Image (cartoon, rainbow, N blue to C red):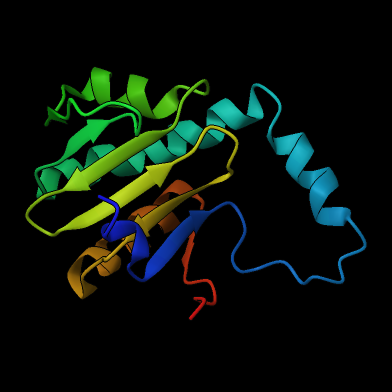
Length: 141
């Protein structure tokens, strides 16, 4: 998993691209607004819906980063419960694709590492249907 976290990544976000650095703090006020319940819960449910639909096409495994017990292809209710938890981080692995999703408790986005072109095409459609955006941040070198 550590190697996947070093791979190129994309984000599924409530915003369509990176916020400019000279935003005078407006983003932080909006971020705090969305981090409050029930808005954060609604956003995490959108991410859960995307993961559910991804699971229709790909086998997946899920766990918390501090655990090593990966659960393979959980029932839809379990997958949603995992993704909607706000008290811990979640990792979702697509073993056949060697791709990794991360959903951290204090983030308003989900990250996907090492995604194939086919997976990105699917994610772009699923994100649009869920009312969120798929985009690639500038990658550090």
